[in-house]
Length: 320
Image (cartoon, rainbow, N blue to C red; front, side, top):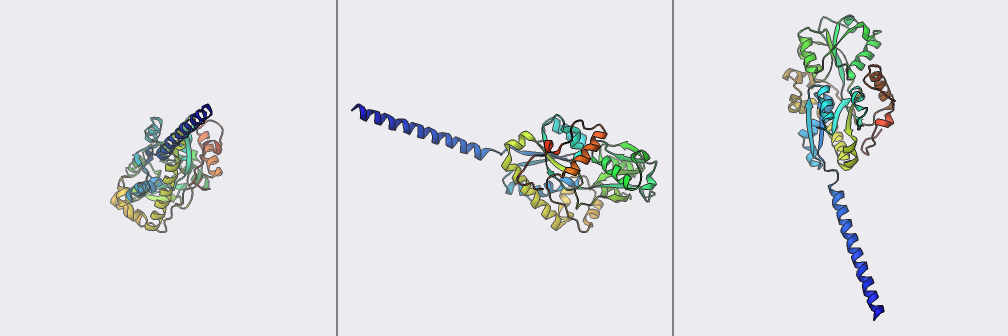
């Protein structure tokens, strides 16, 4: 009898353990299913480097892929950086120099490159880059516009000290200052390049949109670690959006571009661009990282060791 009771108690105990294990397993499955559902809030300035995100939003690609994405536009990098500091966003389209200015002491990591390009626009009286010697050029000293200008001047056997640099945070203000002849030239990205041209300015130089020009998508490390699935889904959407832009051109995104403050005439200029091919997102190249961070360090925007490994984050959908 005692032996039978022991067997019964043993069976009951095993059942209790099994039920508990199943219950625990169920909780784990619920957690796994709900993990990564945090809203992705991405900030950017009004540059075509963020166009793939807005194109995706217009085509409802985020919803179709089961991710919740909110996009926020800022007039300047200073405003974007403040939003980062205030934890208003968990992702940002920016550039490597601006990223260098706020990354030390933060937990923001580089997810990938992003398309986009800068250009040097000038009043029509200036026919060449060398003709700008001693003249005032508007840039944002804390972003990649200064780095681009430095390299452009070097190619023309000039230095930054050969021109007068004026700090102007907003690209829209740089364009209006150029129109009002407060500056001789300005470094801006599109659609500001096209806005300047629509105002009568001359484009002296423009980076190719087929190359890496220092634009990046960065994220809070806390967000990345908790939202692996949704981050990979985001990059799948970005890839699809870039394919659509390359296939359709800017003309399909007039409503999106209007959010950037672009004039109708400027939209026409953008739409007339031929052979526009945005480069796919991929991991930042070590050489690009080192050169931009070296510049940022020379301008006292960054202190510390220059190491891509320290700031890069591995994302499955982002390849080399």
